[in-house]
Length: 559
Image (cartoon, one colour):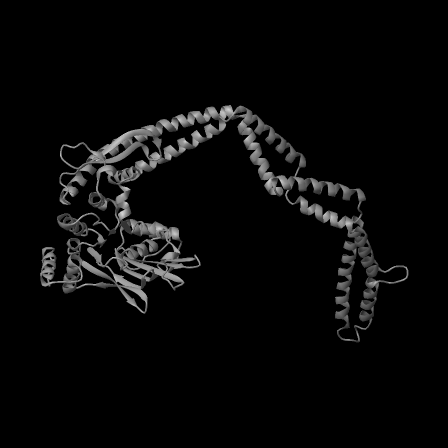
């Protein structure tokens, strides 16, 4: 469950720390006090898309952290698979942090370890289920109806297996379409590929050849300079007709030192060192001579190298460097082979696609049967919840119609409702009012609550379009659901707020021309005042306070 939320520099909230409890938590406050900002902050720390506009005016960054305790097994598993460790025992403690900056850079941490937005989102979706007013509107779209029904069904493994079959079939079908392209277009493409393959193969390219040729060209262009340098170095070492050379002089030095080695301590050792130098110099001389002999270049070689470099340059402009060209050659040969053998490949793909299609069709048919079974259970369960929520005459029906194979099966699913006895069910999006949508959505959420294994549910504006007895029933239902999971609800209705185990007041204050928001937990007397304000406005009478006390007493709360 969500135990603590810390917000800094988010919209009108400069700084707020909120402690949530188990059970039913409710937040109330005047319009514009910042209740929706709390939901925006929670969405942000759960990894949802956010905007720099959320940062409080005058600040360069905003910060949100959320602490969770007693995580569900699914959340514990997800955190572990992502490589993060939990603190404590019995489900552990998890701390999510997110910093949003004006420069667009986000800093994310999970239990004090750097994390990505993707990791945050993957963990967050298993921690909190946020139900906002926009989700009521989602009922107007049939695209969401199948998702709710499948959540009820408990056949997720079969859905996954079917989706794999469908993807395999779709992939084969796309490849078949490609191979069935216009014969003239395939012939044109084959001609292009043959030309390119012949051009590259004729060039006989090897990786690193260009660099090697450039070095050879540089050597030829500097051959005279190289010859003169090597010859000069060889002459200085070995001498000539008129000079003795460094090698001869070193040998003489060694002989002179040996002659005095018996009468001069250390001379013999120096002579030996000189002898070693002589051997090294002789070896160097041999290598210089070999290099000089190899440095014989034919001027025609330079023309050959320049021509080869020009060819490689043309190839590079078309296909890339040597490795990229060879990679392109491999791909071109594979594509040409595919075109030349397209009839055989098409026949094989046709067999594969047909096999995948029939397997997918069988799996889709099984899903249809499971959905029809789930629909019966779903309608019955939601009907019971609607009856409790003061909608006893509303009957939910699920219309399942066949359609072409898709990633979700071969069904189209639409929720229908009959608002009054004897009336045929009609599309929910056409006849349900705002208040009815709110209660229908709550009924669906209640039915699915024990299936999704998410510990915390947040309801924002669930009271839209309802009041009086219906609002009381919604409050009682939320309190009932909170017995097995944490409920956090933002409401404007006293009948709902009175049912909460924990009541938090969001209050807006203005100081020095700036707006500030505070969040305060209320005791029994403060709850009476707040419920009276909600019901009656600024002028609170004893009668209103008495009514508020009766609301709290009826919910089981006393002074």
